[in-house]
Image (cartoon, rainbow, N blue to C red; front, side, top):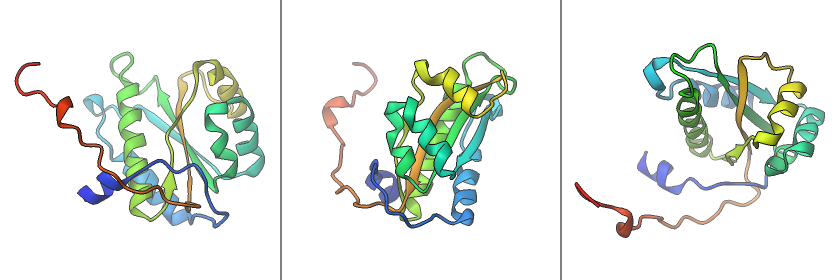
Length: 165
């Protein structure tokens, strides 16, 4: 398991090979098994596979241009009605995204975490007809990698402190 965690890298270019529904569902299962604050599980997910919707999304969120070329993407949203404490959906969704990325990598696929920029939130809500209580948080485009980045450890002992600074 440590090799999956340590060797995962962002992939932004994909082949046209489709990703199976089973793989997508298994990836979503890992997202929903992520830890969450007070077990509130304040998340919702939208799976994007339609070419027009992916292209529309990429047209106004430049940070996520990779979405239009990926076979599939998962939009991770915070659910304000599910959170017990204001703002905790951010931690829940972050943990879900990390699990998504690790599951993608464990299946031999590649993906990348793309934020939903604040200036794109209203457009995303409109495109997906999101209810008022749903906040788009991040999108993870994924598929079979055109080229996998090489692994190099990022461990840096100078960033580690014990007991005090």
